[in-house]
Length: 107
Image (tube, rainbow, N blue to C red; front, side, top):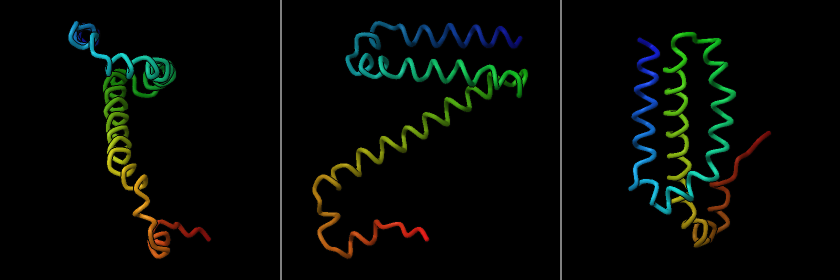
């Protein structure tokens, strides 16, 4: 049963990823090219570790890692989208008092 779930997931994912609408998108091509190596290397390292430590729950563990990575990326994209215009305008650092609000004191 577990192998059937893996194969069905693989076929569904491949159908989506190789759809003509998606593969023709310039944004998709620009995204896939640099990330393919990073993601592939991550899977090559993490899947055997998950299989060893989680056994039959390795697929669920990988799904969790993918979801966590997506959410982390969403937080980074949000910060870039909303933070970069603020920092580019330099209005955030207009007053010296504002600089201290961004300061992190480590003692």
